Amino acid sequence: MAANRLDGTACAAAIKSELAPRVSAFVSQHRRAPSLHILLVGDDPASHVYVRNKERAGIETGLQVTVRRMNADSSREQVLGMVHQLNDDPTCDGILVQAPLPASLGRAATQDVFDAISPVKDVDGFHPLNVGLLVQGRATLMPCTPSGVIELLERSKIAIAGTRSVVIGRSEIVGKPMALMLLQRDSTVTICHSRTKDLAGIARDADILVSAIGRPGFVTPDMVKPGATVVDVGISPTADRQLVVSLFGVASERMVGFDKKGTTVVGDVHPGVWSVAGAMTPVPGGVGPLTIALLLKNTLAAAESRAAR
Amino acid sequence: MAANRLDGTACAAAIKSELAPRVSAFVSQHRRAPSLHILLVGDDPASHVYVRNKERAGIETGLQVTVRRMNADSSREQVLGMVHQLNDDPTCDGILVQAPLPASLGRAATQDVFDAISPVKDVDGFHPLNVGLLVQGRATLMPCTPSGVIELLERSKIAIAGTRSVVIGRSEIVGKPMALMLLQRDSTVTICHSRTKDLAGIARDADILVSAIGRPGFVTPDMVKPGATVVDVGISPTADRQLVVSLFGVASERMVGFDKKGTTVVGDVHPGVWSVAGAMTPVPGGVGPLTIALLLKNTLAAAESRAAR
Image (cartoon, rainbow over all chains, first blue to last red; front, side):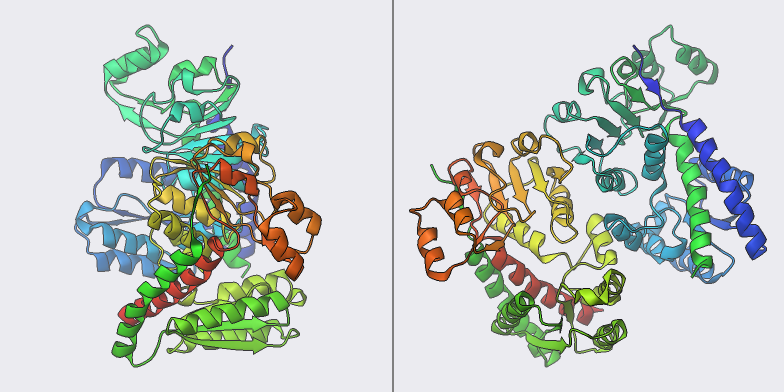
């Protein structure tokens, strides 16, 4: 028996189509589209791909998306200056600084840049004020990936209240906000991490298991309670044929694709879990598309919320 | 075999004595004592007792403590005006608005008042910005009660990293920040609440069990793993003789005290847990004294931090 496939692509499409009438209403009331400004500093190739995908999805949804490119050797003051300019721009609704910033800026300056984003335009939901409001159950802008997971669970009619859930990973971007959102919805949440002992045993207690550590195939079938809902947030691109064979088998469809392109993306969850779980997100096509959909939803929410003030 | 008694009174005294040289250094450098302003609105008798205790402890530690009393019928604008005045006062280091505010103010106004406190003077650590910084592991001002629990555990040489901990209760004041602080110290944390199923079974997995729900005797011996550390944050005053008999036994010392005064305070943890746990906080004399000590520590930290900017 194979787990029910939680289709993130379809869910993301549904969310985006629900945004359309709200975008139209905003346009007719304010004579401009809700606007997202993406700040892209440097030449990281993956960042360029992510930004292009966000730009395309935003435009498809009727948002105005502006990508501001800055050189890799931009100074802290230059990047901060751009953020302040966007903060002050009344026609800018959402600001996204694409991570990672160039390593040459240093950690402190990187933190300063993210902290400088006005909380009301913080469509990534990373500003500490928005994180605190999330803890207190009254945030408007919340991190996109865990918000997307909640949308997927709720639209798939998977009950959260009264369940036990286990989140593997405690990042600021996924693990911690994910745990807080599940708690907010009355799940009993355990957060696991690199220092956790008997992680397999703890994971097996979960009705909802979310893995967000970026270790291919980490969650094996023995770690999953039969019938549990398994959400795979880990998305690791790989060119390691041996790894892909070990996960999917040498005669799998995935190998056909891999041998054609030379790369594929793999999740934290071992494909063998499909025969144990009750419902599960695929990789690709699971959580990935939802992250962008929620970014668009946050941009619209930021625009509506600023307009209502 | 009885659990090791985690003496909150002694720990609070140690913290306060460590503050003394820092207070002296601040005074000699800035020609004034670090100052705490407590805003007390209305006539709640318990609040008056709490405020008096905070005032006394602050003065003993060399802080300047000013209690600002306002009538129970003060308007939202009046209370906000006082908070703004204190925010703008350069000689005010810490602002504490004693909860609860009069019910007549309403929930929204109460939230507005707490949100209005400048984050750099927020010695309760309740401002969403400080809560977000706590999540991100970079807060200066954190809620006093869970901070006190951490101090008690660390000074008692109870290992946190690598343990499993269970927090019963998910309040903004104790449960959630407690869970975040234990997570920050590499414990694997589960947060339980009213919607949790098999709470007893989950509690039994805990190496560190923290109860903060205010239900006398809720944590019974069968819910505790032998040798676990049990922290009792629940402090319920009671005049219910039957309850006290059921918890402590009719021939207990506690009954002697109760029959003299007609009241006592009881914790969330059943006294029978003393024979199962490895270490445990008493009530009274456990977490209670630590909360005030940490308030003083926060006030000094706020003063030092503002002075250093």
